[in-house]
Length: 237
Image (tube, rainbow, N blue to C red):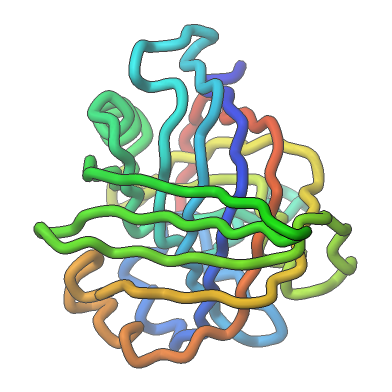
């Protein structure tokens, strides 16, 4: 059963390679870090929720809104199946009901903040910009890319970053919440330029302050699609 349905649109990904040991305290029980070609990634992501429904119902002022999150990648084995998923360090939205529901029922780490965005198309190019306020200071990032979309290459880093269809969050010391995220394969816009003005220490704490000096490994702009998040279940370590 779907808990939430929405369109996720214009997803801007800024990917960083980091030491896996930094993420060990955040790995939910029952999961392990998912690496790509031996490298561990975290991603700073901004996108839009559009036409959002919770249990099939649209709530006033919670239909269209921005989200910015910092996430990393894990996997969970079920018999012979390997479920590839994501874990969120923090998710920022401008609407108060989302943190209330997601934090209490899914064990997530949502935070409400003032936010805005801008999409601009001109001469075959698309510029996507997301901004939010953290401790009274504005943070922002943007991507300029080709307006036309294309398929990503199978087996590529882009496929690894975007093709994780499960979400995990720690429930207690021995168990975690698991939920499926359903959407078709996404198409991407070819990135031309980008800019990031984010104080990671201010937004995500001292544990992630090192990202202020970490070079961006790759940048992706995904067009997005209709998306559904299923009702959570429980897994154990």
